[in-house]
Image (cartoon, rainbow, N blue to C red; front, side):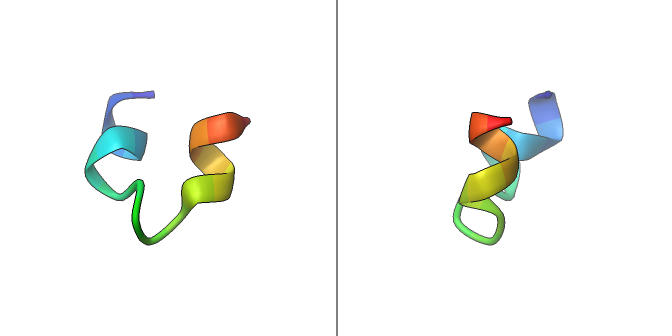
Length: 17
């Protein structure tokens, strides 16, 4: 769940999941 923060802009959905 760390990469999510890095690509939060690209995949904001993953950040929530």
